[in-house]
Length: 207
Image 1: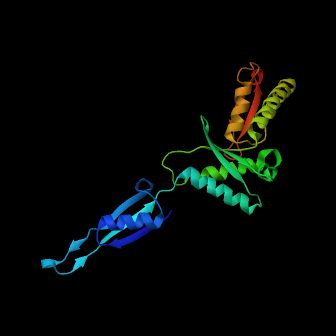
Image 2: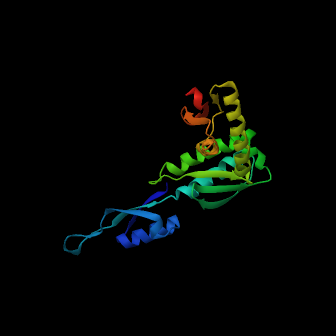
Image 3: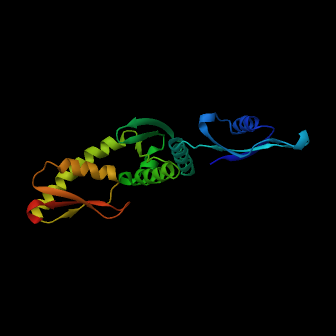
């Protein structure tokens, strides 16, 4: 968070100087008047105005910059395109080395998503959900999870015992739940704490 204190002849001049130094507009800052300007007794002397100007960080832009910095430290130059969807703000990433950011079964991508959400919400007054995607990985992963859900549901019924999946982020758990919602012969629940929360598939006759 960028914050500067300006001393000037008037509050207005101090504010304008602060905006110039921060290269921001009035709607991008918070202004706190620490001291008003005052003329001295009988016109002698003068007390300048003191103003504190604070740049308001856009949580989404801050999160995007964080992601770019982390990717750069991993040796990956990444381009991020923002897209608003019902689930949240999607960061669509593209890079010649995108596989590094995805990782095995999306584990790196999920870890980056978890950290990016922490950054986006550390100063935001409203919760911001950030979803990371990389060259349509999420859609391909969704298809894989749907097949996995049906396969493990069949396994749970065959052995007549609950089957536990690997830990997944909430969006991936949701895919499992929705896929098996109308199954009829199994039920799904989530257990554990983030980021190790996992889906449990249980046969109805075993409940």
